[in-house]
Amino acid sequence: MIEVKHLKKGFGDKPVLKDVSAVMEEGKCNLIIGSSGSGKTVLMKCLVGLFQPDGGQIFYHGEEFTTMTDDRRKEVRKEIGMLFQGSALFDSQTVEQNVQFPLNMFTNWTTAEKRKRVNEVLERVELKDAHKKFPAEISGGMKKRVGIARAIVLNPKYLFCDEPNSGLDPQTSLVIDKLIKELTDEYKITTVINTHDMNSVMEIGDKIIYMYKGEKEWEGTNKEIIFSKNQRLNDFIFASEFLRDAKDMRMLEQAGKIDNDRNMDELMK
Amino acid sequence: MKFITEFGRYLLMLKGMISQPENRHVYWKEFMHQCNDIGIGSLPIVAIISFFMGAVSTLQTAYQLVSPLIPKSTIAQIVRDTVLLEFSPTLVCIVLAGVIGSRIASELGNMRVSEQIDALEIMGINTKTYLVAPKIVAALIVIPLLIVVSAGLGIWGGWIAGKASGILSSNDFQRGLLGSFQPFNVYFMLIKAYVFAFIISSVPAFYGYYVEGGALEIGRASTKSVVVSCILILFSDYVLAAILL
Image (cartoon, rainbow over all chains, first blue to last red; front, side, top):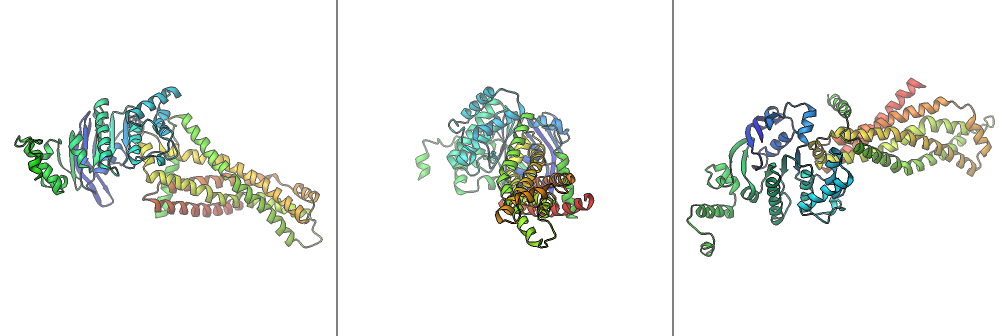
């Protein structure tokens, strides 16, 4: 579990995070959503220690992260895996070398053991024939998979994903979401995802935190979000006509007023 | 004020890279990789520049020494000392500042912009130790070797040019090379090489490591690192000459 208490962060005179408190639940997909500039990326970077907060506390399993010694922080970071928006793969290394890098750095395994583990995780993310390819030779979706494979190769307790669906087509986005959800459940990882993608919110958001202008505006589950009365959240999530209709349908469906299959033809009219 | 801030960050970067490596084997591989990139990668350009530098200095020295009272072997002495004291360490290092410096700055800048440095930080790796230190250590080992090779090739170039143009014979050249030779000149060349190697590797690493923005800023950082390195090389060249000669 990751707990954030009264977190503050600003750049120059501009406050970006204003007294944010939240709990990232253990073994679940915790989604941070919000419009551009709402502070979700800054919140994530504070959580992983890339930014030093101006105030407040971050606790990893009850241990304060913000005031840890560098050595202890390094130890905690070994339990963190992160998927970056642009995948952040090492250009000069092949897919296999990218995934093997954390093993080379932090284990004393033999080459055969490392290769076995790399094959395992690449197979798990459904990348079997890309071992010898360089990042420049693979697609955006494949890069995300390699990024995920690298993030989970050391069996982390926490997985952070910064906009995992950006730049991907809807179908690949769904595949990546499904993969993250499966890995979260399979390895009991505490996953924190920073996203704009409404499919992700509805499909894998065990817990959703909505950020607005540097503050936590709303939190709940993907079931609760449909019935939320928060106007800002509704404006953000159900921004298009299509999504508003989908919401109405889901509300009617959940209230038992329509049977999705039976009434579909009628609704299409 | 900005200069003091930047200098402070530069010193902090240097301080930050002194830490225990997470895995010696991986660091050793990275160090060897840098030695190869800096040393073998720069060898062809160093060889070409040095050879022609020596050849041209023979021809130009001969052109200026018109008095029949001055023995021809003096040309070789002048070429030798010029190559050892100035041309090989300073001129070659200025070229290396462009070749190696821009590569280091753009490599680290690209890693910063594409979040590869952040990825390493999150893994729990000290990125200054892993990315900057091997470059500086490799430069400190390889660049003085390149300068020694450069001095040898420069003198050889001078010899070939002298012989080919008929300005002075091999015997004259060899007599000149051995005449009034001061071993301190070689030490001075090596001292310069170490100082310049540190500048060539650490200044571009600083500009690349702290780059902010996108592709445009990487280009700017690369150019700035080369300009600053060249100025610092020339300034320290003067300071060393004033102190040691």
